[in-house]
Image (cartoon, rainbow, N blue to C red; front, side, top):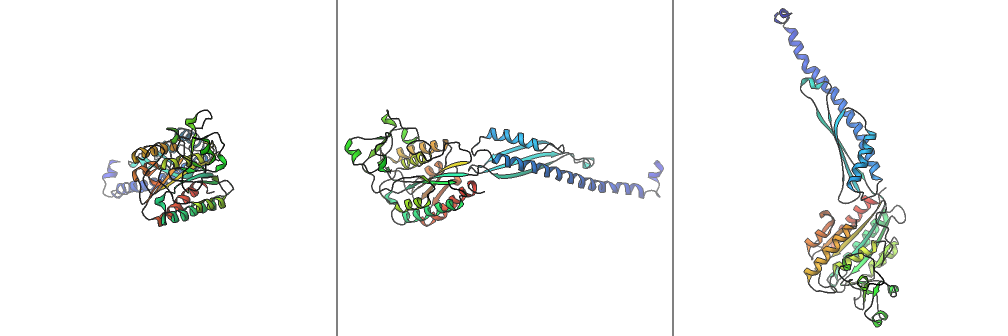
Length: 394
């Protein structure tokens, strides 16, 4: 045998055998590649099924629950042995509406490892819409004197646009509801509330002459949605005689005609108190008093939003004209709203505290800095489209 390998006449044989090694290696690589692709396809099918399963869970389901349910469902649908050390991840977007899922494993070749490749990674990903269903949107809109002129005109155009976006995207009655909260230093509600227990009056004369104006509650109820208590004046809402020509709050509704009419009623008047606008936006989304049109927190496939627009710094509230002091109240109510599971968009129009508003938004991508009031329509259309695409699309 030794002579065979050393015989010049047989020299072509070992050369030929050696030449076969890369050929067999290439053939083996093709086989392993095919097997790995099949394993990836099976894993993709299982991952897509898992994503669809998770999309049926309520928006806001916590991460531990998502992972537990995803792991259980994925492995019930993927029991192949081609891949080992599989790592499954589920990542909700900051803005609710989508889930990103990835699965990564290791493929161990059957053939190619004879030429040095012992393993290689195989991965796949999918994205699903999550929590598709209904939305409740509160528009907390600065109607102060600095909004007069072109700003209030452009705001009305933009608000009409957003209402139309959600109207056109709603598949069924009640899919999208909107409230409108024009604010200055106070807000205004309907005088039909005059005799409710949760309003507080300094005098009978004030009550008798009341035109619907309401100012900040006692601290820290002023940054809270805590229920008013009939026996505790500190929890009640102080009625007041002065709030200029503010338009009344429109509670949640999907009566699009009523919403458009409310937008047209807005008038720019008075100074700026962002906390009162924000907290009453929250009240309109809440299922409890003073408004009760909001769905219960945690309702499956329903998401709540506040869209705050302002063009200036805080200048005045019930206790103070210190911008710094009122900014602190703003931060408190922003944090409390987000802690309640409500998502906040903020829009700064030319002027105002950019840092305060950016921090108030649920994420940096949900803050808009508008330098020209003419841009408001595009911003409101963008926000409306995000909400519609993520939550109302079928």
